[in-house]
Image (cartoon, rainbow, N blue to C red; front, side):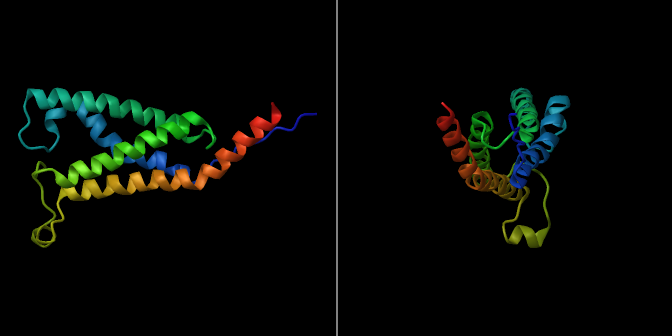
Length: 154
């Protein structure tokens, strides 16, 4: 009688859902009405690029939702995590170095400490990127163990 292994999702897999929570509001609004996003200097070219970005982001959110329930050792889930780590770290860097393009403020006190919507958004991207690194490190031994178990069965 063969024993069936049950894949238990690692608690840190929630990072895939956090990615969705961060991206889906801008992605959906970017698809439905990109010119209503609160960005400065919107023109037709920017609207097209926002729609293209929103389409890509929506697709990646779908991939994250599908990967969330998969076992941590699958190469596709791990590859998606690497890609999302690079994406979030890059977004964080871009947003920290961007000129002001969101016409809102958290108030004079926040502005005096350079806490702007762009920097806050960049910080959240940085934390999500760090979350993917933590997930990777927390599950790397599981992936190695499954790879070694697969090699022993051959």
